[in-house]
Length: 275
Image 1 (cartoon, rainbow, N blue to C red):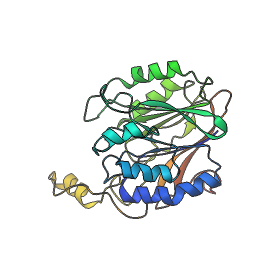
Image 2: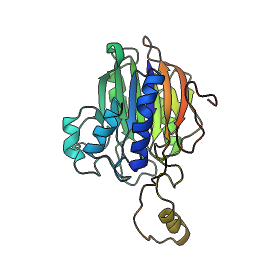
Image 3: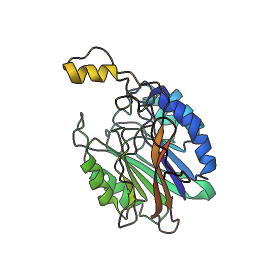
């Protein structure tokens, strides 16, 4: 199976990058399944129902969220009516929606998508992501009913993401980090057959401070004082993420490549000369 995961969509720039590039990539790379983390797509904080529809219509098969899952209030109701949105497993016991779901890809093949929030350096306390994922992975052994399993680990610390990758090795097809908006250069297949990248990066304007217009973050770093609200940068966006090919019989990854298309970052991905 050919799977594409795209990192945190940030504001209008990120949404425009998705609608510009994703339909082309689905065709050119013959993608079987696409997951997009949309948790910053609306004004840089959260995801609205309208913008969720936009990303799904552009070619996403599934949207994951994060610690800002319900910052856009309409998502509390929208997620109950849209099964293609997955919120974190360990967000809150009373949270609407589901933290893991099995989807159908091309030719009737099944893909399990799940997400967990990390604990290190996060502003709010969340339940242990390892025990939360243990129940889900135990119920869906790799190479069983689902031909592929993708884990979105949404957290600050690179060490926690790497630990999750190794802990899931051989139990998931893909473990990919989100939340920090900067693509890491460590895409690889782990010894047990799990494709891994510490952070997929963001889909947004990289002429920014992690997707935000530079002036306000710089003011806060230099003076220690806020001068206004953060606003998403609105220049040309890059879509960043991870491309993975998997074996249908085992569920293990056979190929992994970092993806960068459009905007300011050097291009990479299947068939890209610099890849």
